[in-house]
Length: 67
Image 1 (tube, rainbow, N blue to C red):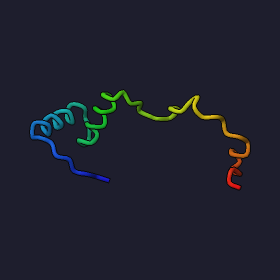
Image 2: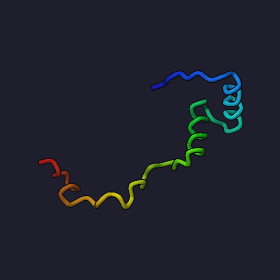
Image 3: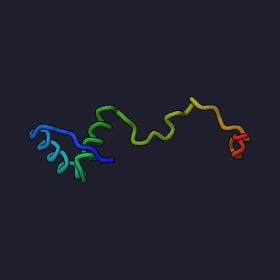
Image 4: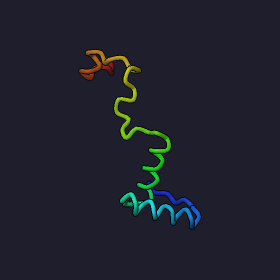
């Protein structure tokens, strides 16, 4: 779902420069790349719960967990 945000003209110009320099297709892509880097977010959350979850039981693996 798209949304609209208000930014100053200077910010829009900086976004345009970053878009050209990074080869991004949209301002959204520029912002996502910048925020991922700034917040040190992994590109994928796969494996982020490693060690926190117990292994599935045989019953769960076979899809019989609903009784």
